Length: 238
Image (cartoon, rainbow, N blue to C red; front, top):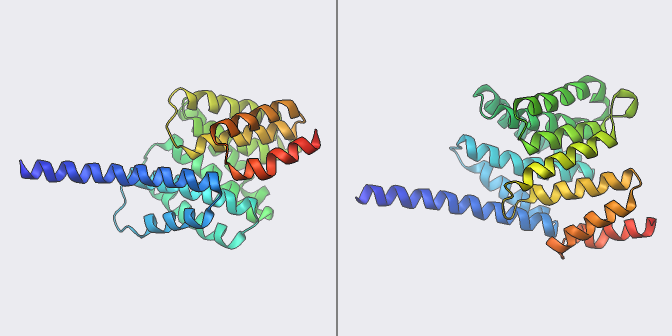
């Protein structure tokens, strides 16, 4: 009986820590507190024993942090966490853990490599796109796979087969899938809405972009980057 209680306590503690990290990361995203985000990643990396689910969670947080680093031209930290992410991807791929999700991350991290070293685009750009396609093919209900397929097409030049119009369709497909089982405090959902709004902006559909930004602010009125930068910039364009 005592052993059962101890095991139950450990399981509850595990899920409590994971839920807490998820909420903390979500709040970091809304406030754009990337210093705290990095601290969470470093704490998780320091754990000596990591389960496969734990690695997938950590990989998602590293994905988000690297995306921010690349966008803000912070090449040195981006390179460091790209290396860590690729290490986890290779381990999970060798173990054949959720290959659709792993291939989606593989596509994303290749894209990040191009983001900090554009000369790599001819070398790995096509491979990144193919991994995104494979991710979708393996699991048609994997919203994250559609996101990475969309991202690959979004960032690929038109003459090489890229298309922001098709990317938008895929982003919206990812949104519909995600909303079937939407989890509370999932930063990926808000990030996806931002990607859709930005793509609408690029396609000069400003009214649709405005609607998305306003919907995001209804969900999170204090989302700093939307409230202080992206939404005002859109209104200025309009």
